[in-house]
Length: 253
Image 1 (cartoon, helix red, strand yellow):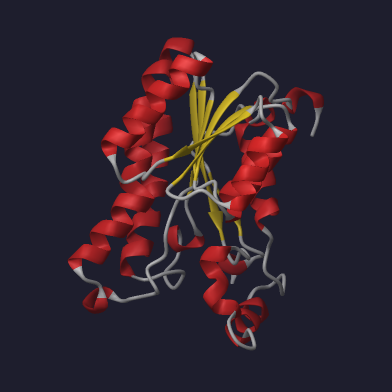
Image 2 (cartoon, one colour):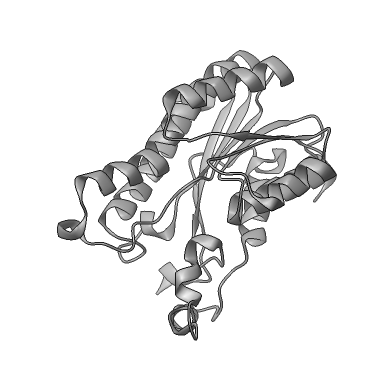
C-alpha cells in the first residue's frame, strides 16, 4: 500500500472475523499496523493465532451481532480501551440456501435480516456518535452481487443485500458533511467457508459458477480484503456512498 494508506494508530472493528473475508480483513489491517477488534459468534483457531501474533494490536470479542446488548457492550469496551473508533467493517453475514419466498419461513427471514442487515444498523448507530465527535469515521459494509441483481441468493438474502446498499447510501448522504464516509462492497463468487457447499463432492457446482463468471474463476477472500483496505484508506477519501463490485465480471453479463 502507498504511504498515505498507512493504518498505524487507527482503531478498526471487524465483524465476522472468524473466517473468510472477515479473517482476511483482520490479517491485512493488522499487517498495516491498525488496532483491530475482531468480532464473531465463535472463536476459531485462526483467530487465536492472530491473538498470539499481534498481541498488542488484536483483540477478539465473542459476540452475537444479532444481539443489541452484546453490540452495545462491544462498543463500550472498544471506547474504554482504545478511546476512539476510526473504521467499522460490517462483514458478518449468512446465506439462505437460495430459498425462494414460499420456501422461506418467517424465522429464517428474520434470522437473515437480523444477521446481515440489522446488525449493521445497530453497530453503526453505536459507533457513529463517537465518529461524529471525532469529525471522522469510515464504514465499509459488505453487500453482494445479490444486492444488485437477482439470482445471487434466495429471497431473504437478496432482500437484505439490496437493503444494505440503500442503507449505506443514505448513511453516507446523511453524515458525509460531518466527516463520515460509508461505502459497500459487492462480492461475487468468493472461496470462503460460507460457500463450501459449492465445492462439495467433485465440486461441480463450483466449476459451473467459475464457468459462468467472465474471469473464469472464484476469488480469494484476500482480494476482497484488499478492496476493503483501499475503501477504508485516505486514498479513497472522495469515494462516498459507492457500491464496488468484485465479481470477476458477473454483473456485466
